[in-house]
Length: 401
Image (cartoon, rainbow, N blue to C red):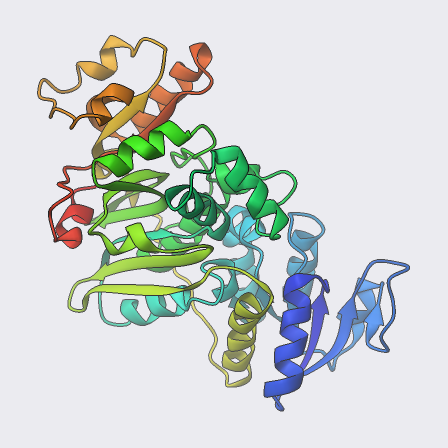
């Protein structure tokens, strides 16, 4: 199979290395680069030359960003070429049109590398769906934010110091907003829901980040036997579903509390299989490149993914309801505190740093944080499910969320 690479950055180089060393049935024949960067006989700076070459069967998009990636993917599909992509942002915004275009032209659209890096998360969800309905998924799906949280948990670094370390190692961009504000995880949660629930929710899911987490917050949580992780979550039942991205407080007995460095971990629950957890490198040249090459091999074997979007399913924010801890100097509006008449007491010294706001949906928690930040931009909010740091049953705790 002849393949054209669009982009030759970190991921593109990883794909080329794996294909050349391990996949004799695949061949990279074209590499699209910027003008002035051509150094390989396979290089071109003219995308149309790739479209016009009938020997190119598959286009692998490794560019990132929205444009021109969106236009190139659509043009490749319309030209009857299969597409493999690692670009979670463009897929999360445009999945519906990509899937319709691929189906119309009888070609495959492959997404494994968009979510979880080298972790076979999309493939795992797809296999689960062959037999089971999936009732929920949750996961640590961003290596940069997890590196920051893990470094803070195992050192005395402030958030700013941990972020600087992530940037030095190349995990975080100069502008880390997508990682620390939950945007990257939101894109991956949207894509996961396509596979897990047959729904495409392109925007508007509640998204809370970790930008305002402090050293004092981490110390207070750790002293009470807790960790915090930024997680993407999805729940579905009957014909309704809900999605969210938010910091979640976990007991140290939970496996997710110990996911280290820039690793990812994600769990899905199926009707007959129960819980399945996937763990591995969440990003990087070879892990993400491996995921793309796995998709290429599936394509070469004639295994084309089929996507079905259930338009009758509706969003129900009440499916993701939890207590929340709130650290702010602003007054918490009465309407949020009055949503429940029962509030569990926070353990000390957690109660010194945080207030407990009971029984909010993730959507309400997002609205609360927006209001608080008008008065105190450093406010922090995290889901605090009914957990006990000495409880050895993280599965039961996870189902509370």
